[in-house]
Image (cartoon, rainbow, N blue to C red):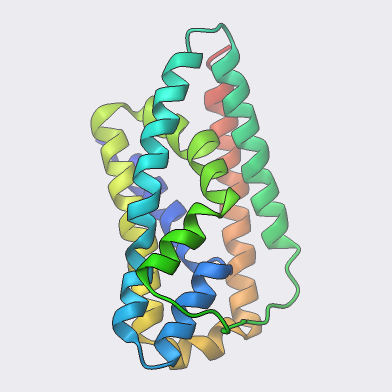
Amino acid sequence: MHIKDIITGFIFGVSAGLSPGPLMALLISETLQGHRKNGILVSISPIITDIPILLISLFILDKISEVKHLISVVYFLGTLILFYFGYKNLKIKHFQLDTDLTGSLKKGVLLNILNPYTYLFWFFIGAPYVREAGFIGGVLFTVFFFIGITGSMMIIVVFTEKLKKFIESRYYIYLLRFIGVLFIALGIMLLKDGLSKI
């Protein structure tokens, strides 16, 4: 059974889709201006950018795995990144949405390519997980990651008017803090995997 791979991928995807950042600002900006189609295009842009980054990360990990203990270092760095993501979310006190960005799929792809967190996630967290999970588990993790991220962003597009108020409310802060706790929990899980590689 690959329930763990499905749930983990989905959690990471939803967390990425609901987290504040340029992509969410662009998503809401497009929708508020009446360009719902463009909002949907923005929501699928991670699929275009992330799959090549994942494949390159897997290739690099395959090469460095030949060096003793180096793959464990990647796992430990991934753990630190997840702990940082979690700490960052737990420290959030307020959030103001900036919707000045404009564009669509092209702009969404560009924003994602220029986002360093995309590379950090896939090289130190996503790719090691996919590699460890095996072919089926890795595919399920990746598929449900994209279901989570695109699905949550499409929900934002459909319900933008209501969700914009929610995103600027204290309840969204509570949600981000909960996601922070999940990041820390997943970091502990990745640390355990890393220790097993020593």
